[in-house]
Image (tube, rainbow, N blue to C red; front, side, top):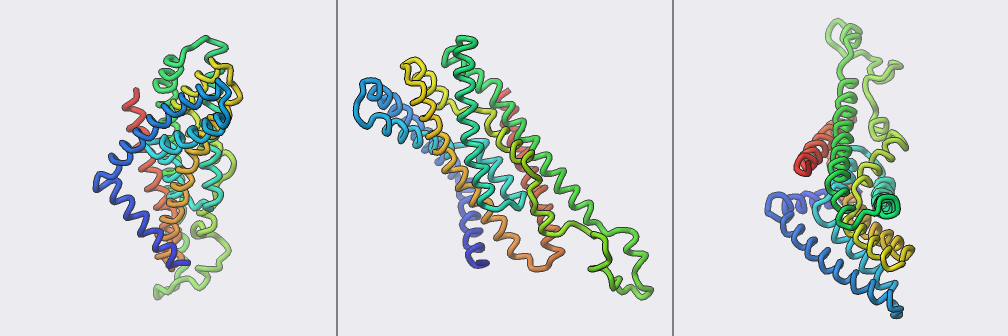
Length: 304
């Protein structure tokens, strides 16, 4: 098992080096943008076929929507930043983190549905106005919320490190010749959080914050699809298409979640000594939180 974790860690490190040191991120962004453009054109064609009643048009539309969601998530995005950073900073089981990735993508699609049908029915907004509202208001809010979660991870990790500091009473309890207190490991009080305690997810509130931060910014492709299907009187087909788009997005964020868990566990597998492991857990949390906060707030400021 440890060998598999080390192989996974090496693969993640190699991918990161290609993305950030060798210019791979720019290549991926261009490839994703081209894929989104092609998928959007195919989406418009599938909608025309659906309106004329061609066989297989509905399944073709949903397949194109899934592809659009995949390409959308493969480019620069805030969902991957949060899910990946959270998985690297907190010891969350892979299945649970994958579930959060899927839930955040579906919630993002639900935000698009609420924005379009709320905006169209209540305020009579056009597609351009809906897209402008999403980019001018919801995108900065989403990045700011993600930055707040990163700051919370920094604070939580720092508090864990603070609780692990040597207690003054411990020094007084040592023997005259400097020997360690014979009850250091069984004295009835905690000298710091255990690895299991440090690995705990704090509960549904934290999960809701993660999902909500991603969901605040709807996908522009989902807005495009929903407005067109509303005008064509294909309401439920468009909403289902947004669901397929969200699953396409989730296919990438789940992969990022698994990579983050693999990298984290591979790094921690190198630490066999319990105290070193206990210190590494909050240090990873602080580091990941700082990266999330810095990058997301930088993106939010660019959009303001």
